[in-house]
Length: 354
Ligand code: PLP
Image (tube, rainbow, N blue to C red; front, side):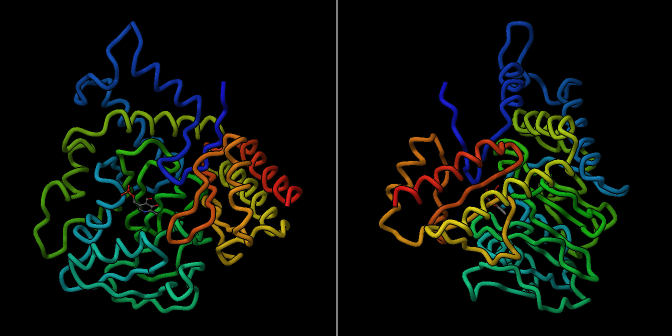
């Protein structure tokens, strides 16, 4: 059987054991599939509750926060965050570190006042801004913890007196986080925790309810919380797959273990990029992402040889985003160190052949 090494940025690699469990639940001869039973029945309600509970357990979510699984992707959260948290008399602060931050800013501007507190567009977003002042009258400060396209990552959350809102779509569950500094964390599932179609939301309850504006029901976190994350029909298969993935995280030893293996995998790749004279990394060293490793070949004439070697080794999904060019190896939790080693070997092989 062909073994693929899937470095796609998202939808990304899923754990093989999880996929086996999923296929067994989608079709077997003994019972109705998880995809064809009522979401109000106890079987699916248990799945939803287990998934929400595992998020709390694995991320050490303090009391007073609610966990939701919503639809509409992280892009819907670009809108729901300001709709629920930006009071009409206040402004929201955003740190602009790339495409996804820009989209979040644009959506927030549709709701109310926004100020961009820091911005790394001057160097095509190859770094995380460090020197900036956060006004203390903001409704919240928004940051994108990992920039999937540019390959940069906040090494820790920004310092701020106002509460933080974070898009953690591409690094959630890859490291320990201090949830208590955040009023809201959201993450599209399709990178680290499951398939596309569901978005994880962790929100601090006491912040909800006072924006001075009416909030449409389907955009209202409070309504989703009161309905047990089932205000409308949830994305049942996606939530189920997330639950299986979180169970796998737990069996492996939790987020701390993935933090360690993420560092190990990223170091392997960055060490080779820095050692091999053919390659150069895109992001500033201190801001390099442990999830999306972006790099280019210095000599464009060897690109086709590299692409051919990757193809022969069944390496897929390694092309960089068009705004950055070159290559991007996404090494989410389900990516094995063996697959990373296959890529490193290809990079060495290319050096020998050039
Ligand atoms: N935020 C980040 C950091 C992302 O990487 C992506 C998708 O790649 C998004 C937001 C958009 O997510 P969605 O397509 O689920 O709306």
